[in-house]
Image (cartoon, rainbow, N blue to C red; front, side):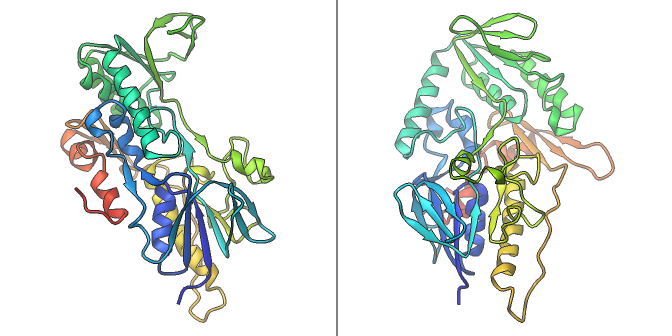
Length: 368
């Protein structure tokens, strides 16, 4: 017997995981504006290499056995009537609603438009520009910026590639100076010009970029890997701005509920539970929220379980591919400096397949 109606808004990593976990517990409806799951981890390579163009797209049709997926855009949550309002005017009743709308990523790690065809067209545009560029500038020396720079260099060994980073070291948020040094060594050994302590902004002329010291870089193509923006504007427009902090993230308690709303949860990149907006954190939040939602729905039962509290993990493993055949893995060591593992571990864990077989299995498909 299924207890109650659960509406999950957002079909990214956290939303898919949570919907699948609750499929046998309640009547689950997953709402997403996309017609397919977008495997963002594979998108940087897909934006450079044509043979990867279709890899990031995995249909939702095998995700839920008993629940359903609705392609649509949520524009509001009627907390009095306990209904999710879609752009079409349709209203979805809920006993629990979960906001998992994630964050907006810079190009090319973005689902553009509303259909697979539109996004593939966008990726093809990036591929053509990379193939034709004489000088590509990547701004941002975090994991995405380092990974994208490596992908571009391997696809275009004849082009000039520059990575500009505002910090004093690459991968500075990883907590490992050694990882930053190893990434720098790989990039420089592959003729990528790395500019540290170099905050960039568009210059006065098209195709020029200026750092804080006034130095100008000419590049005919640029990618900005400088962070993400939570997808919460729709909540503000719907009158729920008080749910958000100054950065636009949803404020949640340690049970991952929106403050003051026991039947509204928020998981993944969209909330303020952790500063580390990475996939492992989103999946961990989805698992904990699934448990707490079961507790909420069965709160009057004789087999009532206790809710769990979310404890942000400050240091998690980090894998940064350098193309399909190299990379580094930062492995936290309790009480000590993080270990930095080399190419073999990184290739097996992520770099070669970008975790595509794993995500295909999560959505009910074969790994191939």
